[in-house]
Image (cartoon, rainbow, N blue to C red; front, side, top):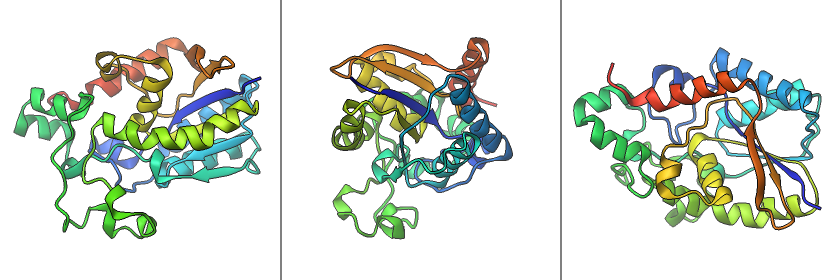
Amino acid sequence: MTGKLLLVRHGQSTWNVENLFTGWHDVDLSDLGAAEAARAGRELLAANLKPQIAFTSVLKRAIRTLWIMLDTMDRMWTPIEGSWRLNERHYGALQGLDKAQTVEQHGEAQVNVWRRSYDVPPPPLSADDPRHPRFDPRYAELDPSWLPAGESLKDTLSRVLPYWESRMVPELRAGKTVLIVAHGNSLRALVKMLDMMSESDIVGFNIPTGIPILYDLDEQLQPISRRFLGDPNAVSAAQEAVRRQAEKK
C-alpha cells in the first residue's frame, strides 16, 4: 500500500506581486497569498484528503502557507519537517530584479534561457555579495559547498532528489498522505522526476500559487494520475499568468 502525494506551491508572495525574481530571498505572503493558502486547505477538505505528515522549505512564504492550510483544516497537530533542500531555485544575481525590466535590459530570449531552461543557471552571486546564503544564519550549520550562488532547474533537482528519497519515499511507502508545500521550481523538479518529463516538457510546465496537485501512486511510487484540485478553467488561467510573468511591460 502506498499513500497519496500532495504538492502545493506557496500562496502569492509580496515579491510575486512586484514581479521580482525571488529565489532564496525570504519574503512573506501577500494578503491574496494568505487567502490562496486558506483556499488550498479547503480544497483538501473538500476532497477528503488529510495529510499525515507535511514537508516544507525554510522560507517563510512556504512555511506560512502550510500553517494556514493546516489551520484551515484543523490539523495543526500534523507533523512538519522543514528543509533547505525544498527551497526555491536560487536565482543568483537576478534575485530582487524586476522580471519585465530584466527583459528590457537583456532581451526576452536571454531572460527565457535564465528563467525557463533546464540546465542553464543565471549569473551567480559573488562570494562576498550580502545576498549569498552563506551570510544567512539559517544555513550556518550546512557545509558551505552545498550553498548555491545560482542554480538551474537541473541543479535544483539534484538537491531535492536526495531529500525525496530519504524522507518522503519512506512515508509514502508506509501508506501516509504526504503534503509538500514548497516553491514553483523545487516542485517542478519533483514533477519532472515523478512524471519522467523531458527537459523540453518541464520547461513549459507551470505551477500556479496555492493550487494543490494530487498524485495517486502505484506500489513502485510511479504516478497513476496527476491532477490539480479546483476549477480547471481557473487553473489554466493561473498557469498562463505564470507563463507571462517575464513578458515586456
